[in-house]
Image 1 (cartoon, rainbow, N blue to C red):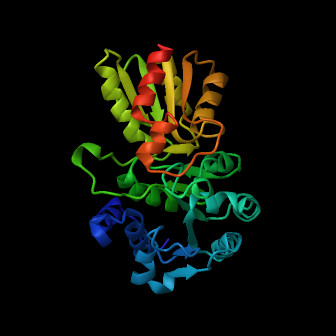
Image 2 (image 1 turned 180 degrees about the vertical axis):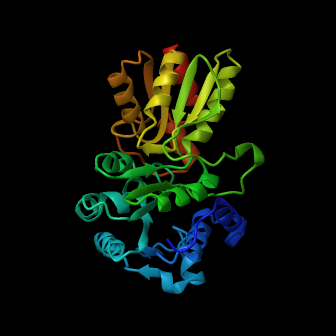
Image 3 (image 1 turned 90 degrees about the horizontal axis):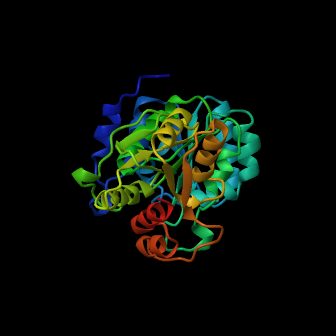
Amino acid sequence: MSGSLHLGDFTSAANVYGAGGMPRYYGDALVASAASDPRVVALGADLSAPTETDVIRDAMPDRFFMVGIQEANLIGVASGMAKMGDIPFANSFSVFLTRRCYDQIAMQVAYPKANVKLAGFLPGLSTLLGVSHQAIDDIALMRALPNMTIIEPGGPDQIVPAVKAAIEIDGPVYLRLQRADRPLQKDQTLPPFELGKAQTLKDGADVAIVASGLMIGQARQAATKLSKRGISTAVVNLHTIKPLDRNAITQWARRCQLIVTAENHSIIGGLGSAVAEVLAEENAGARLVRVGLKDRFAEGGSLPYLLQKYRMSADAIVEAVVEAS
């Protein structure tokens, strides 16, 4: 590796604001990574601005490669570049990056353990564009692939350490990313994380809400509301979905009577399923309730509307806890 990467390199880059005053955490982290390591390159599928890869395209055009709207070819090119010693980041919307080219990912990335980083945006219901753009099964698909690491930052500020962690892994990584849509407030920030180690964001004794991605915010709100009802609620950020922190899940299950998973994904095959597998195999004994998209497709709409309609909001988490208690 040419040069070493330090969190400070990413942090300073993430403080650079893009158009409209919004932080470009991922785009700036890519530039910082490429500046530190000549192996880092970015590939796009005609979604440069939505995936923030226009940042590296403009800053370092010789490190950016546009293949057009052909995701299967995107994966093949990335795999070939990895075999030649590069660290390619292949970028698209999550649903296109995983579902459209699943066989290519399986055969050209996961099977040969190619050092490819898959960066997917618009996770779950976080889009107005409806079913065709909603990645409700991407975690399930990626979990099923041997050799694949899955990281879903708990907030935009954790994108920076997620990129750093992905680069340090010699093998396939799926990054499930939600872009910042507003400057972060101090009470919304999250600490950097250690890959594979769950983060306790709030301690509690009665129930543990295990969440990932944008559902971290809903879980925190739910915990505050539950505390007013006299229910001591922990909030756990399970940012690394594969490999899973089995010890943390087991410990919380033996400490609390109820585990609630909160995910911006189908409850089939995602975070809730992963936690359920651990609880069953470890005979941990706690009751499990899964909050997420039930076995269905969702319509398009604003995120607050969709979370409320499909019972994935903070209030829905509170209701799930109360009903199960």
